Length: 68
Image 1: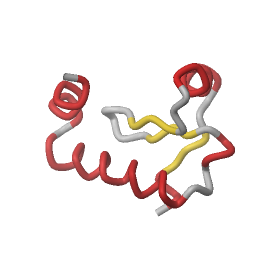
Image 2: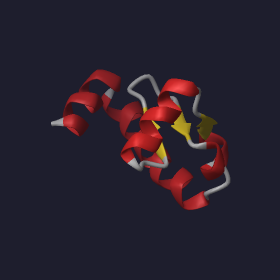
Image 3: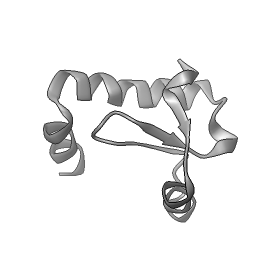
Image 4: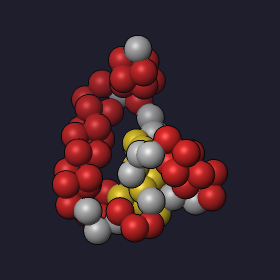
């Protein structure tokens, strides 16, 4: 399950550090995580739930529902 986490590139990594989040799931199904959180099984399991929601709802609907 840890393979759902992708090391965050520069801008997503800056956002994660600024907000204190360990990872963020995008509506297009990529999960960006801080490099030091890549091995975090609990975080991977949490983000995998979001990926399941995206698969079920579609990315646009999920984003509106999640951000609303």
